[in-house]
Image (cartoon, rainbow, N blue to C red; front, side, top):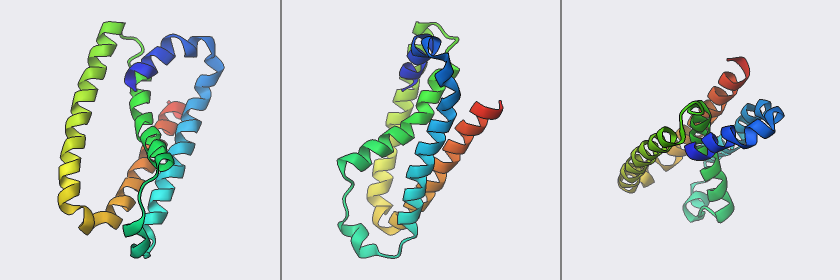
Length: 141
């Protein structure tokens, strides 16, 4: 995603400079929607439905997009780098992210059933906070 953000700045954004002002709004809308949905699901007391409910392809895709928006915005911030530096930064981000995801899988396997509702609430707050951060930085700074 950082490489895609870097490419967007060097190609698409130069062609469509008018679109740059909409990026914080789009990020805010997506992250508020998904974060709010996670909050609502985490606050619901209907645990039987949650145990039987699996994450569908559409939900997984939406969550993947929402959590990748922050990495995409990093690509916008490294726009001044040459392509080798941008690729190196992106590889570092990818390796660190992969390690954190593996750690998260192990922790989730160990504590997932005990903290399932609370994790959804925390995740919702985090996504909303990321959306607000991107929006505030993009609009006001």
